[in-house]
Image (cartoon, rainbow, N blue to C red; front, side, top):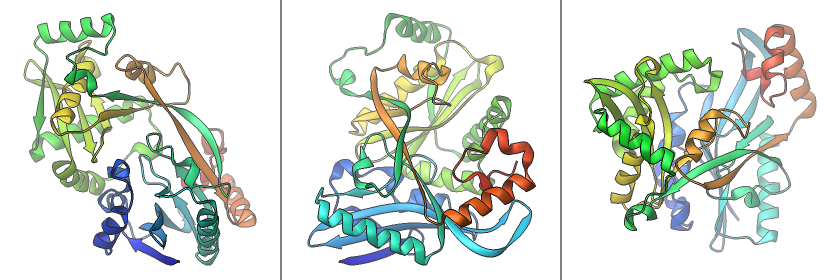
Length: 356
């Protein structure tokens, strides 16, 4: 068994070589070293991929290994670690279902976690890869919500996948002068960032969707390499914008924001239709729209995405506590320091990460 722990920044070439052992259908932006390194904006976070190879069989698992040295502003007397998927979808991938190989791999990884003093592990599994099977019974998995995808075959068949209401909304938006344009310049991207930050504040969004300035600087470079920024324009104003990312098979609806005061019905539907046409020209299979803001089946964002497609996928999350006593200790300390946050985040596996 060949075991490697690769760093997305320092071992990017080896990382890509290992991924090439997997079927091409698994070539997705969320497993790339570029994506993982995007999330390593401080010295406490290492973007890693744990790999095991044996006679052509391979198992890979990209994640963020983060140091636990403090809870908010309060320093701890020891250093531990936890594991979490980068924003988006991840989890392990493999080119085999060999039970003996996978069981051995899972034990090797658990042993490594003990050596690294990993307290807990939180995984966001990829709904398009159905990769729960490669996580194994070592991690408790649970269904979180549905996600939606739009296949591009409707473009080739010259058929609309949308219902009459959605088609009418797109038509009215077109007639009102709404149009979508692709932008690659830094000023347009900065305009999107300002719009996104304002939208998150207005929605009172959760902490994990507030990204640092460094993140957006690096995202701009990644988008120009593996994605696109689309702006929805009306009367020379940008009323909506979104960042899309792409792999070999799928395009992803990554981040989006709207000017709610000037929004026009059908504009975001037109945005996604334009993205689908771009993805089709690039030879991609479809556009993954993701899910809702919550797990509620009546979530308004999920309803909007369902208006674009009836294709749904199951999104699972995985949790494992490697050091129960330490995990309990960290959670108790967090509750002492931040009692006002317990009602919102007290049930989260990594609750001690939420400090505002």
